[in-house]
Length: 420
Image (tube, rainbow, N blue to C red):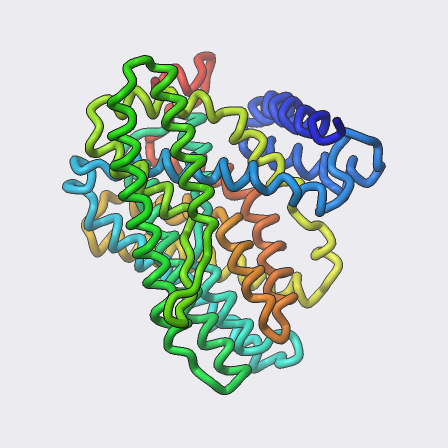
């Protein structure tokens, strides 16, 4: 009973707060995150009133399955952007920008935090510094997609942005696996080639392979039905299936094999949308069905934001450096790579700002990084950065898209209507 009441409070509270956010001209996703903070264990949840908020982090984490499913639908939707027609026009740009902006953020954060280690070795170790550098590459697709959907943003930068955040997941996975392998080697004195090079490549290939098979199977099954509602149900069923399968892990020949949920679901959406002639209509119906799920996802994400990290001065110092340098790396990397690939001036100026949000992928990496000697520092810094980026990132994304001319200014008529 308490779980159902808490979920209803999360959904209704998030939506009500979004009305206040609209008056302040803030994206709805910011309101959902703030609602999560208010309902979380550091605010209303601390009152321990049954059903009013989440009394503990364990209570929030117990609903993690909802967040995983929401991420699956987000990735499935992003896969719709990888249509052959768009890949022909900006596929090269997306790949170059996706790789270079992630690499730039990693290199700059590595340099800044290693310099901090040389000045204050008691604050952060070299292994933690290079691990945080790799985590800096990750960009959260969820907040970006929600802003794009809310304001019906459309244009060259929006299309490039959605492709870049999808590619970023694969790039971030490789950078993190390699950097974390080196970090573990620095602490243990032994380098594992399998961990550094083989496992991340295997994970990407397995994820793309599973997603491709699921996309083809989804199209094959959809052809047996002509009812819109049944086709929608089949699509939802397949996304749930791919989310479930992507959680599977196994070992083969000494190599740990697993899947990236985002890559699997993105590839499912990509294959399906490129071979199915009624995919656009179906994707629109899926978007409508998932709206409440996405609200819950962001409210739960807000409830997971750990305010206790603000008590540690060392974490705040590392966190401020991490946030500032990562932001610089994302901006400089995207500006340089956009210039290299011949993007328009507005894309060069504003794309980097839209790549700042961080959330689930970065937190997942931080949990893995806890195996380091001072891994708790890495996790705390990432928690602090996610707190800042998730609250500020959506508003910056909206402003960047508005400045690029891909969102109509809000007036008496809703931006959704104008861009519809």
